[in-house]
Length: 283
Image (cartoon, rainbow, N blue to C red):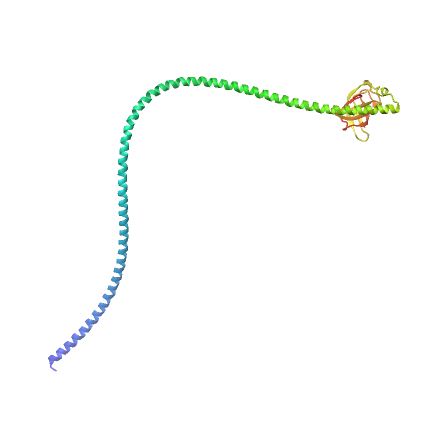
């Protein structure tokens, strides 16, 4: 082989080695660029998604804003319409106010006349109120007098009814006692006729009346009365005892002092004898 050939061979080998090194370096760089490209693509995709989402939100906000704009336009039109209507109403009210002012002027004149009339009426009302107070006072006095009269009448009627009822009760009780007395007298007359006793001699004791001072029922009942020898009471006298319409029996005088007498119960009545009961020798 010629020297030039060897030179070219060595040069080729050197170039081949250089190419292989350059190729290896390019392959490593290409792999790094591919990884970076993939990362950039992923970031780009994420950014695109976020951008699309943001665009959708902005589109929705735009739609809402347009809707709000339409509503504001409608509201503005309504406000303008209301303003025009109010302007017409104001014009009408102004015209009416002119008429009212004219009427008010006439009313003020009439009010002046009414004030004069009211002053006169107020004075008359004061007089009527005074007369009314006097009439109410007279009416209240009359009502009080009427109520007092009605109360007195009612009380009198109750007293009358009580008196009539008491009178009826006493009349009934008196009738019963008279019946009992008549029955007793009839029986006494039969006994006197049977035993040939002179009733006039039995009733020889005087007509006396008094009250029971004390009555004891411990053992033999003893009754003390306020009549004694100075009243001509003697042992053996009998007294009938009663309290109102209640007949309480008959007592028999045992001992006599100057002002009092002690007696035993000869015949029981309708109740026990007690202090304050009345005693009589003859019913």
